[in-house]
Image (cartoon, rainbow, N blue to C red):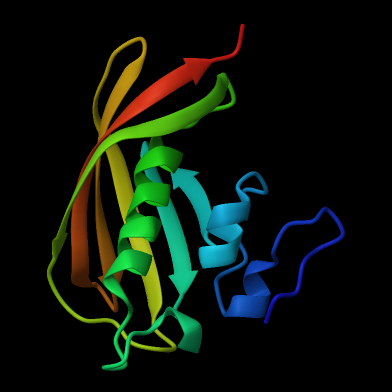
Length: 146
C-alpha cells in the first residue's frame, strides 16, 4: 500500500480515498506516519487518512499519537498557502472523543479561526462516518516567502 505516483507523491486511490484529495509531497515524517491527503473548499481544509494495521495500538484502535500527528497535519495545512515558505506548530491541544479502527477513513475538517501576519489559530475535527474521533486546536507560526 505504499504506491507513489511518478511525482513522488502518494496516490489517494491506493488508500481508498476520494480522488479529489491530493498529497502534499513535502514532509517525510508525515509520509512515514500517514500518508495524509487534503483539499480546500470555501475556507475549509479537508484532510483524509486511511487507518492501516500499523497505525493501531494493542487494543485494535488507532493509536492516539497517530491521531495527534494527523491533527497536527490538519492544523498546519489549513494555515499553509502558496505564499508560505513553511509553517510550524507552536501549540497543539487535542481531545479524544471516540474510537477509530483499522480500515476507517478519517476525515478532518479544519478552519482558521483567527490570523495575523505571522500567526494563525486553527481548529479541527477528525471524523469517522460523520462521528467525531478527536478535536484539536492549534497556534501555527507562518513563515512567508520573501
